[in-house]
Amino acid sequence: MRPVDPLNRSVQYSFIVEYIEYITDNVMKKVYGISVNSEQNMFAVATEDGFRIFQCNPLHQLIRLDKRIVGSLRIGKVLGCSNFFGMVSGGFCPKYAENVVMIWNDERKKDDFYMEYTGTSPILNFQMSKTRMVLVGMKKIHVFNFPQELVPIKTIETGMNIHGLCELSSDPNMELLIYPGHQKGTVQCINLRDVARHATLAPTLISAHQTDVAQIALNSTATLLATGSTKGTVIRIFDTKTAELIREFRRGADPVTLHCLRFSPCSSFLAVASDKDTVHIFAVKSNDPTWTNRKTLWQQVGLVSEDADRARIQFKLSKATQNVALTELAFIKYGNEANTAELNAKSRFILRSHAIVAICDDGSYNLFTFSSDGTFDLIRDEYYLDWGDDEHFFKQCSESFDAIASYLYGSFFFVSNIFVFYPMRFYVNYDKVFPSTSYQCVTKIAEVLCLRRKKSALFNFQSLISVILLLICTCTYVRAFVPKLIDRNKQGFLGVFWKCARIGERLRMAHFDEVEYELRKNLPPHFPKAKNDIYITRHTSIVAQKARIIKLLDEKMNEVILHGLGAAVSRTINVALQIQRKLVDTVKLDVRTGTVKVTDSLFPLKDEMDFKTRNRLISAVHIRISRRTI
Image 1 (cartoon, rainbow, N blue to C red):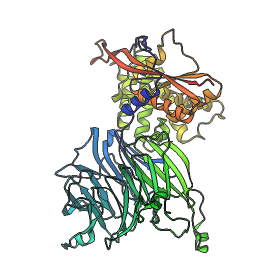
Image 2: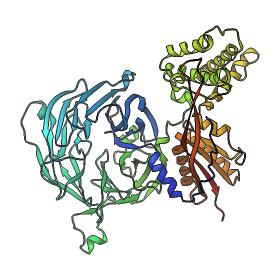
Image 3: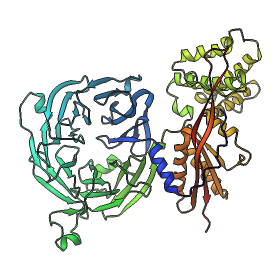
Image 4: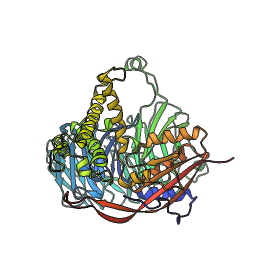
């Protein structure tokens, strides 16, 4: 590929940072669904890029199923702390229809689903417990036995449920199902244990609000039910056994869209998130006398009902988290806690420090701590989509030998194509770079060594280069898993293996896209390569590049320039925005965008045929990060 003037001189500078944010909103990884498990220690994310599961605290990616396995997803959930995951396809690259629910059993270690069920209408939501699965449609709810096999046991008629509202108790002793009623502002409760016995009991009806119900939540024991309406000003808590109103909380006076209601594991607190980018925490019940929802000035002057309690804690999410469309909350354990023996010895011990995390669809993760005196503090503000995004092979593929073999062969085949077979052209066929099995890996290496030119190549210069590259890849693989075997302190012949492994570890940096490779190699004379130029590719580690940029700025460098082309545009913008957020009020961003004319060299179908070319335009971005002058 031959880019023509990557900077495109006709494109003018833009000093508006909001334009960068606009581009980011349209090209970054889209999050369609977030769900927190019943123990509130993990959360699952359904994205355009696949399915991911994270640990709430400390933040850490546990499992990732990419798009080639599961496709793009609209809903993704995990059953407690088990190895069962549920998914519903959606987005731009779905693998299944929207009326199919897929169950993944991670214990099987296979790249296929454990079971699937196809419904008659689109699945708006689903819930899982240790014994039941519930599929939610527009006007019907289907109940199944689970997880041995999906056997339908009941179909329930509901009111219009366009948002797929449904709650299923995780307590096996009380299999309570909550869903919207036929009348406006009502919800219905039914015990699925009675349904399993083929009893025809009428569901319990709860009149919760005057307008439609927008959010519902059950506590861990399924004894309390929290509801919020489309108006979003009042949150009510009911007893699920008697359907009586227990508490009423005033969230605010302005109408809002509620994103999430969440009980703490001990049912002492209720957290509410809304589209105002705020989180309210109410004291449902507490042995701490300082935890009371005190009467506010509005109640004292009679503008708010005496029975409506105000939030004891209210805080806004971080500045970087603005106007999100989806927010999930989870109460977590934070800090050093006393061991079980000490807690049993001190039965009157009261934990006065609590923590809650807010997970948003823009990729932000906010960890807050709050105490009984009404104070709170933002402890962590991170971007959870960055976790596991490092393309370092030995972090991503250590569990799969086939993936390891594919990578080793990928580096080998990539370099051999450039420097051996086609020294004047640049070409990568990704179907060959990443074969799916180790058998294909072996056959491809044999093809390169012996059969590429339909003649023996075992004793020519090409074979020598190929064998050296294969040795480098093998040493890299051995060093990754047996470091002591290949060590820099080894002398003589064994020292050669260490040097080969070091070369192999750096070979992974050659994995650029075609145009990104040319952008790095063929910059025009008026924009020479310098120390402060950083090139972002699809395989760039955002965390590592952020650290590198901050280090360059700390070394009294006035500016750093980021370059991204094609598929790396969104990643380049993401890195720039995160640097600006981390170094707020100290740096400014200048951006130049445009299109770059590139020429593709198309691979011939037969060896005797010549390459063909194709001209096309591709987007590029160049962002200058500079220190503000005081």
